[in-house]
Amino acid sequence: MASAQAPFSFPSAQFILFVFMASTVFHLRQRLGQIQPAREEPLRRAAPPSALPEPAGTQPQGMWTINAIGRLGNQMGQYATLLALARMNGRPAYIPPQMHRTLAPIFRITLPVLRGAAASSTPWRNYHLNDWMEERYRHIPGLYVRLTGYPCSWTFYHHLRAEVRREFSLHDHVREEAQAFLRTLRVQGRRPRAFVGVHVRRGDYVRVMPQVWKGVVADRRYLEQALDWFRARHPSPVFVVTSNGMAWCRENIDASRGDVVFAGNGDEGSPGKDFALLTQCNHTVMTIGTFGIWAAYLAGGDTVYLANYTLPDSPFLKVFKPEAAFLPEWTGIAADLSPLLRP
Image 1 (cartoon, rainbow, N blue to C red):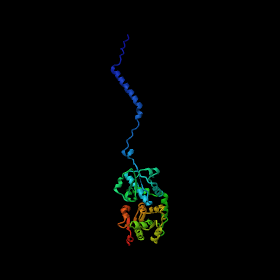
Image 2 (cartoon, one colour):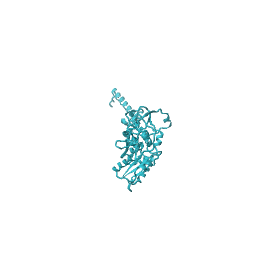
Image 3 (cartoon, one colour):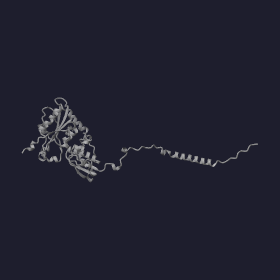
Image 4 (cartoon, one colour):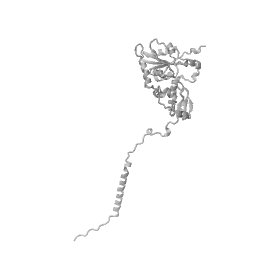
């Protein structure tokens, strides 16, 4: 006789609860798997503070420029001063079109140019500069400032000398023309061992210095002393003379030793050739004026300059500080002031 089967019994309440929880977990894992790709994108590390873009409010605001007056040396001083002071005050710098026309044919300048409406419609605040750096120039107020005056002093921009020298580096064709000329020079049939650029400022200064500023220009004696200074220190130098008074130079500079070359064309309307010759030399003899100062500053090497060329009560000393114009390592030779003392 077959044995009776045990009656079927439904699962207990605990078993039903277990199945419900397992099912819930299974469905949750499926849903999470569907949205997981969006979470699998790799996390990006936060950039360090120095690499984060600056907020718009910290970008340089406003616009600074400078007057463009005078000739080449003056405008070089104005350009370098604008570059330095705008940087110092956290403002963008722009040069006037006339400054660009003067400097760009010779140098690789990079400051942007003011154009048309921007130049005429900007509410400029004029700010006059002396010819030397002052502490107050580090905190010039105003968003739209036009610097004025004739600043040309290393005290403004010497801390940026490498950058200033890059701004005033010659275009290739200008530099090559100057170097090609220098390569042809010989002293007693041999190549010179040192090239000394000589700039003699004449022109309007011959009248203006004694009549207006109680001063003198370089004379024959000063140039003899300056050239002899180099002859005593540099073997086989050649002196490359440029001037806006070349006829006077030929009459007053002794070229009998064969080491003096009258190279300049004296063209004040196109000074690039003379300036390039001076900057491609190793050393400099200068007299007075910003043209010679800049030639010496860019050439480097030894520099001899005309010192003490005004009387102590000259009004020139109110607008010009010799110690701010000539680098401390340059050598000054005192001018002969006796012509000013004659009755």
